[in-house]
Image (cartoon, rainbow, N blue to C red):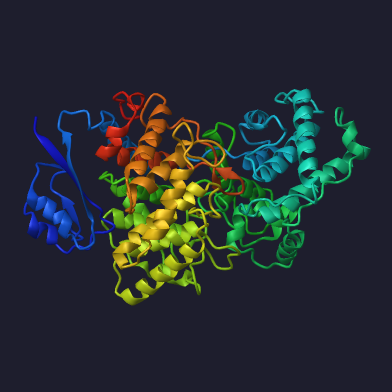
Length: 627
């Protein structure tokens, strides 16, 4: 049987020199951007092709020799299903104007407390009761439980008072008492240990924490005059103490500012609910397509401002329709951010590009990303302020779709040694700067000197912020595997700009190899599909030095883990996806994670050494692509 070589070109490295076409005529083509791609992925052995790979000035051509047979087992049977699933995923996004986001404990609890009129209230209460952990908290470890636990306890406390009155949908009194009691015990212990431990820098946490602690303390104080059966012991309990990071003074300054008719900064619209009754004075806040700041909780807070002179009947009607739509998707529980269309579409396209997947991008997606850009950049979705992370993501996705948009809208975010996510940012983001570096490497620009200076600045800052063991952390994600994948991939791709960061990428690869779990997975708290996918991106989509054998074996074990996790299809949208992304509490952008997983599987399936190293029980049936 004829043996073949697999030929690929890294478009992020290719500079369009045309050397490959001249050396191996007929084996390479140049697209409209003058970037090379193979005429065929599987080619018959040829010295001309080997020479083209050797002579490429930027090492963009990868040649896997003598490992493939057209009918052989080294082309895994699930490769076709992965590619079809990617096409199906993009089609889903083109038809969805909201986005695929996991339900939020924090946000759902805010609606339980303040929007009983909205359909799905009993389902939201049941969701909160079902999400409580055995220790009484809600949410993830390492401080991530504070915000959702505060929100859930305050909401269920409020619901418990409602349950004292006759109501057709009242949840059993005993369940509410148990949930509130266990939640209060966890909060009392966590906040009481030395004034409270540091909590993660999730969105508006420094405002949400003092606000909800104050509301819970008012609930506790009310027990003295208005006792609740089952909570008698808490009537004499001292108030919960706020941790040092909770900025009560800042929250009061914001409230005081809107009381004297100052405009609320648009980056705070997403967390409008923290203003309480003072939200009625934030007259500049208006819904966009029914949503205030892309947040159900903020939208309900805006709806409750009945004294606001800027409310119109149309705005109220649209916001009600928005709330009905987001709860219907639960049904009942709601996400913390919706819609997330630009973010979701850009990150999904970028992830599939990382997986070297030549998937056709629907024109509707490209058009929507183009329309999201303005002179100040792109937001995560309409109604949110632009930021440099989403701007870079949109620009990069458009570049992968064949556009060459101008990066000029990024320059307003440039600081002395890195790029800001948004004006007034307190803590910089490694993943944001990595995305900007990746975008600068992918786009051409008239001002190449400025692009080069900015890229070198970012690369130096990323290297400075790499941990000694090789990983990175980031403000937008709880897992170092996400940040490390972003930074390692960007530094690797910056080679096209002449930036040498091989040692930093090698350190990241070593950290990935050192932290693989016994079952082949990777993860901060447990092995997850998402974090395993990011680890595979680093191992298989970067150019590293040294012996590739340990890398190949680790990648094969990681691929086997992903294959074992499947439900009825290669792309199971209902799979368990832990919440790892930062919003007001942690969430999972489901489509983005699915894309990362498909990209990892495609990288593994098209690497003959990884396929050959797969354990016998790591193979998988020929799934139909998920519909």
